[in-house]
Image (cartoon, rainbow, N blue to C red; front, side, top):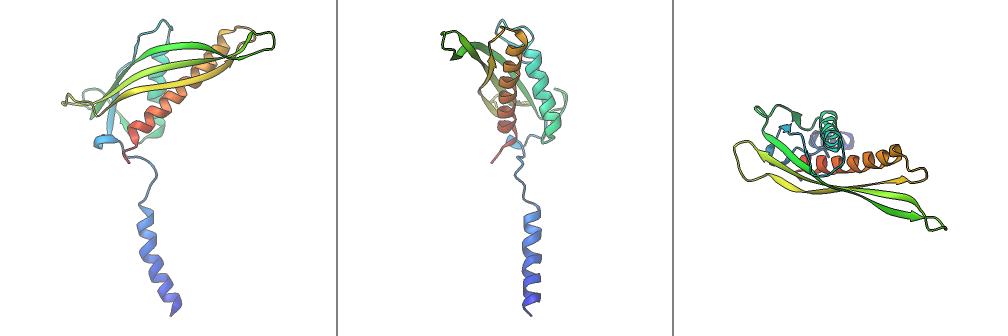
Length: 163
């Protein structure tokens, strides 16, 4: 008898849990999104392409939102890289800089097709640290990649978390 009660309770509980997900559904009911190439208001060469490509790649891998053309998408994501700064982070005993932090600021806006008021807009900031031992551009580029990755992750969270 106890076994039958346990089975009947489980049969009620298990189906209810099977539809729950921690994955977001997209803000404002958006299912498809188009990405306009981001503007670059800095002097950093190639940053807009890197950011736009990183956003597109992350959205395609995440698959919460479908990436479409501007003509067919529910909403369009636009934005601009507004600043990029390198600042000293750590110093050696000789008072020379041993590590820098690159800080990138981006403005972004999600606009639903046919509606002037944005669904979401805001500023995102990402930081990436890099060693400054040789002054190599590849070290700095690694810091930029880390900062862009943080920005893209934050942006994806904002676009896909409607809870």
